[in-house]
Figure 1 (cartoon, rainbow, N blue to C red):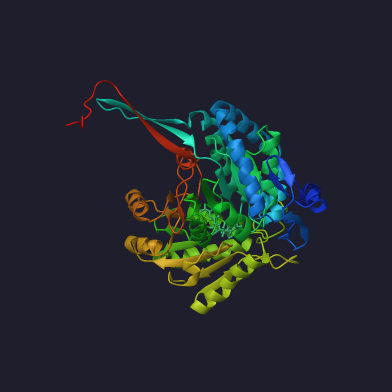
Figure 2 (tube, rainbow, N blue to C red):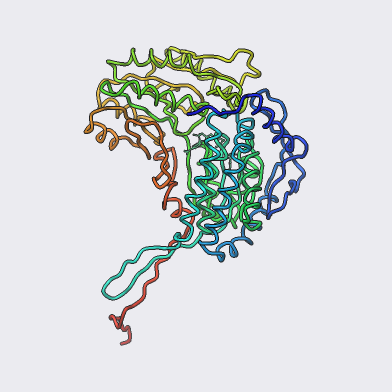
Length: 508
Ligand code: NAD
């Protein structure tokens, strides 16, 4: 991952210039193409994860604002569908181009809003544009279904956008994650009400602003800011919203399912993970070390697919954990705009408190805690060093719970059966990683892992046509390729008689 060509000072100066507007004026909702304050006039403060300074006021939405946005999305739905796939393709490609043009701005704002480092965020903004391009190009063919003829009937299926949908996103890589949901929804012909995370509201606004600039009609993409239990809950309960695409914690997913029950919401959930990376003693250990450390210490460890449990074959456990412990001494922690920093501040003191609490939990359970580099003159407690927990067993809280920070739990295993047993003995089932040079074992273990995605001898390398999502408590549904469109559309079967096939005559 190349460091940015810009210096820290250049990044800081530019970021401050982009953030000034949020300090000058409260951030408002974007509904039907209009910037609007909350109906209640309520606002909340958005703080910098770097030093806890106030970045600005943000409108705090609730039911009246969601109702306004849902109405705008419902009004825009018919015309957006009627525009057709080809025109939607053009508009969404325009949007992708404008994201690319403003990728640096998006990345700088995202870094200060979330604490993620520039080293990763510059690529994340570009990936957001790639997501739009990929789904834009599929827009003209979304309606195409299957042909299922019989001797007497021609059956064919068509797909049509389900209606206005709600998208609710978390704070870890908010811009890129929101594009995974919003791009296919818009390409399919749905209109969207987006409720971004309250700890990272800014780039959702930039995306909606760019969408208007790209020529998307007002009301096609709306943003309502606010808290989960007010704006989020109202969105999941609104009758005009036909489906909810949600990325966040498993417990929030359960709440959303309950909230959406009365209106029979279709739901798509991408939830938490505690993903095992299994390192067998025959693996290429140098590459495995790079991948293991990359997948837990990049993106501040605030990553759903992070390799947060490393299962290491007992013969190499000591040597491999020693190497991880040495490696984390060289991982720079710093200001998110410092081009050399890998780990930036965690997003919020409440989250930092949670992550730090696992240090005590590890010690109490009998594990050993190793620390990597720490930042000298930390501007706030949100900066935490990379951590490694050794002598861990799979029943410890550090092995069972999602920490969502730069903390890796290392567990030994004896053989293939033991590795699979430990890997699956967890409520989550998002991703798994397998490191071995035995081809047969790679396939056997991949098949036995109870999760949605497996990478063999690789870190997470996303390929947009492939399905992304989790099993067990890690999610419902899949993103990527045509799987995304299955969620955002209704399928209809049309059956036409080819001739005078028998029809029962019920008359006496
Ligand atoms: P969270 O569940 O606390 O919040 C996510 C969003 O849900 C926020 O916008 C929040 O305001 C909203 N929300 C909260 N309560 C709600 C309610 N009752 N009704 C409607 N909306 C509500 O999650 P977070 O702390 O922001 O994000 C971290 C979590 O996200 C981690 O568990 C992580 O694993 C998960 N995540 C999963 C994936 C994936 O692809 N599986 C990707 C990224 C993050």
